[in-house]
Length: 312
Image 1 (tube, rainbow, N blue to C red):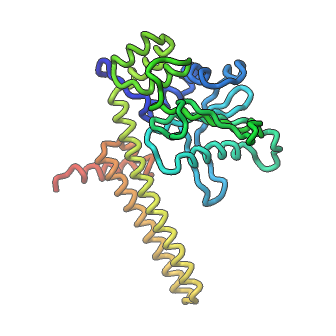
Image 2 (cartoon, rainbow, N blue to C red; image 1 turned 45 degrees about the vertical axis):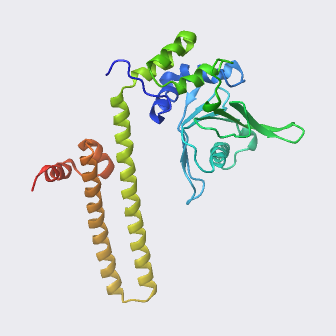
């Protein structure tokens, strides 16, 4: 690893590795304590849980939040990093928060089982143009400022509004996200020793790890796109067969067409998997990774590798 190489905590994989790993829960706990006013006992058992939001309906939308934790009492803490400003950002944040309330109950559960969801969103852009402060909390209240429920809390932290000098316990943690070089990190840890551990992990992550994570997600995106196209083809064939049957074609012709479609589908799927494997090979992926993604045998993958490397 190169000396004094730092990966910005604003990098998605770095953020999740520093704050979203159970082995680093003491870092996450220290960060959250500067923001949240919850019982001390609740911080004693912070657990990183699956960040995936499942489908409610068959055609429903899935989602993956950046970091999701539970406290000792069952509270859900959701931490999201938003580097780029996107359309409908407020709707997106609200959706994620509400989904984590709705996903708690199963058939027959009572509503009193619902636990509070606290969403913390760190923005590297100005989301709340109408507000001057860099910390803004939102709850469900009426026009007399009386709370309706404590079930949902939203905290928005905007990095561009961060003052130049410390004004509270949360300040050094947000400053950590804005550091760009060795000197910035050194100055931060000198004035705020509590930041030594997160800075250490930022330094620990090399450029190679960044490249490896980038390549993995790039390959995975290509695979997802190919698999989606495969599904579209299969859906189209299924609809075609159904239409053929309803038009009253002869049974023999229908059976023959079904067999032909089945053979074509298998052959087409095999070719698509080989194309995916070729793309992954060209990106430098290992045979084991390609086998896991495509289901091809190592022998088939090795043959493709030889063809890809052959000049003829």
